[in-house]
Length: 80
Image (cartoon, rainbow, N blue to C red; front, side, top):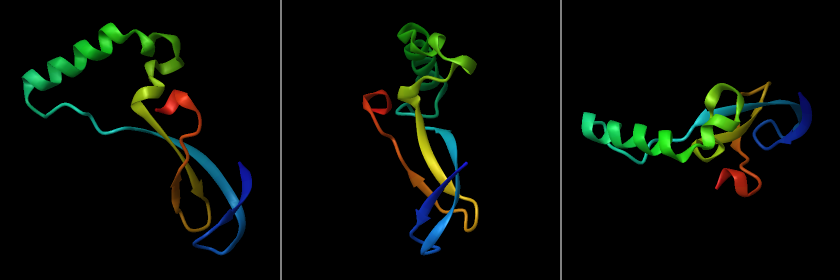
């Protein structure tokens, strides 16, 4: 946890980090889900991280512990 300024609380509060999966660029049909599986399988990026989470498929949020406001903070090229 770290101390940051919260725009909603308008003061310094404790914050924590949260990682969430980005929405899929593929549709909901079985054919589209199979395409998503093949794309992830052959990309190989997920194998290098613990838990199999690829940085290209995740968003990093900073969450205020007082009010719960989530702020997207994808810094660096690994989140693009």
